[in-house]
Amino acid sequence: MKISNIVGTVKLSVPLDIGYLNQNIPGTVKDPKIHWLKYRIPKNNSYVAFYQSGKFLITAKSFDLVDENVRYILSVLENIGISTADWKLEIHNLVIGDTVDIPCTIEKLIANMDPKKSSFEPEQFPALIYKDWAVSFLLFSTGKVILTGAKSLEQAKDVMEKFRQLLKELS
Image (cartoon, rainbow, N blue to C red; front, side, top):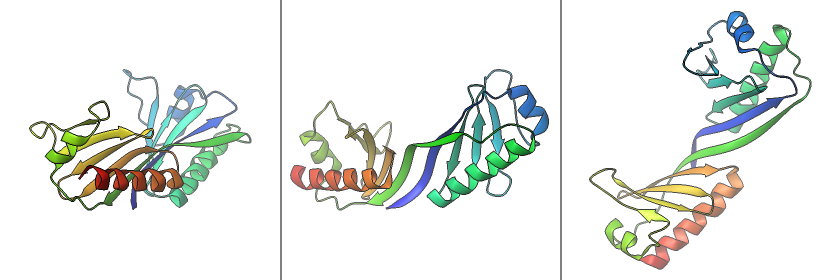
């Protein structure tokens, strides 16, 4: 299993003034059509979105980088006079790539799957889509799997094992 992306949100105890952030954090981008402020961390190009509610969304390619990015943003906010003494990080989504053995064709798998949980329309998208256990899987004919929606690595490992077992049972 390889993590491709992690998305989390940090909630501060104070609201954020988007205009003030835009004026005081170099590199921020404010699109007048949207209500948040976009930013890329210069060191690693990770995406950050600031919201007036006092939250900011943060992305990274690893848990270590999530921590590094959060600390960097908290430091930037402190440097422009915003209190960051009270904050909480919540991970919302892991995107993980893996491979599985496909003992039969995707067409045979989809024929045996619950139609409420699965779809396969190869003329629109080349992967079988399967949704269960609060996550989504994209299964390609090569055996490559993209897992989205897990909130922890433990959950990802657990549902990936369930998915492997399901594929064995259906083939």
